[in-house]
Image (cartoon, rainbow, N blue to C red):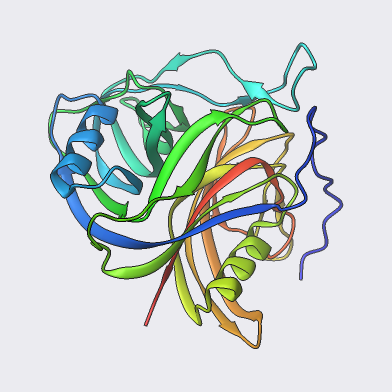
Length: 293
């Protein structure tokens, strides 16, 4: 197991004792092609409306983006928060998505999407970051997998602990049970290892085997597995989109394989398997765990 000397970020507000906010739900898994020329947020909103559900985690698989408006992690110059956002950047378009994740819910009653993605730009360079609402699907459809949640309302608001906008899952009574598999939607608060969060969610839900899908957030400074020695990605915060699986036995993870794209504060993209330790949540992790088998 990798040994880490990383420490959790120090946030300005009070830290709740419970570090996981989890809601059991059904997950309706649906492959979709988001239409060309639409804003990404509007295309996802229309897809959820067709499914008759309002909150989801979405996996971005492949396809073009005509416009990519984005930022990446940055230091907080005024010292009020542990980390902040860079200025807004525009990718050289058209770009082609290599992978990504989105949390889809509401903020102040309006549709809101938190999305991290990695792409090739028109010059062939690999970039990644936090996508802003101005991002637009390209000349052909964007392929995605929607994990629509039938018993969860995802609501974005300013977090008292970090003073940052975060999504929190809230239980709602489904008008109709739509999900085709059992799942748990979790907000992971700062300071918890990503692997440990998956283990706790699986154990609490009684999942022997599970997959992690459409999940994203930020980690203090990523640790990726590499032959010989792990790769340490600098913090204080790195954006991450992660997928994978876990197998649980006797209350512990017998096997876990989490693969991530990580974007650091220098806008560099790193990809690979997350090491078992050294991946502490920085601001938040929006974690969807779905039962397998």
